[in-house]
Picture 1 (cartoon, helix red, strand yellow):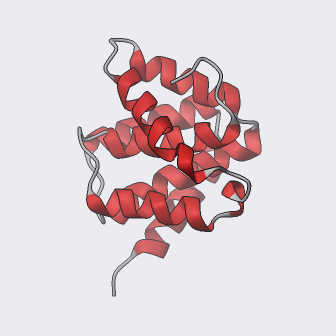
Picture 2 (cartoon, helix red, strand yellow):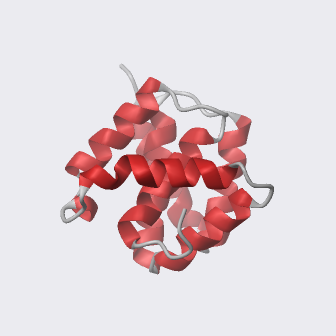
Length: 137
């Protein structure tokens, strides 16, 4: 992952981080990321051919001993506060795609909340909305 991320790369890196929290990305998580990039206004001007390269850079960075901290710092630095909320919402949607949350995903969400300096009530509302959107009937 390059030292300076643009906003699109930071949003995608957030989804890759949360999807990788358990050690691998599920098909449901990959499908959710694809759907998100293809449908949300935040990605209207994004060159979708960059997705694979951004994901690979992120995964490569995570192989380093300090990779997670470096990735979180680069992502936070690239995003203004409103897009930090968006990134957190995307992370919650990717997690919800699996219809279950692991301890490693919960720890990473906590790290994102802290690094993004999210208001706890805002974070709780985002999490609740993701659960509601992905609930099966």
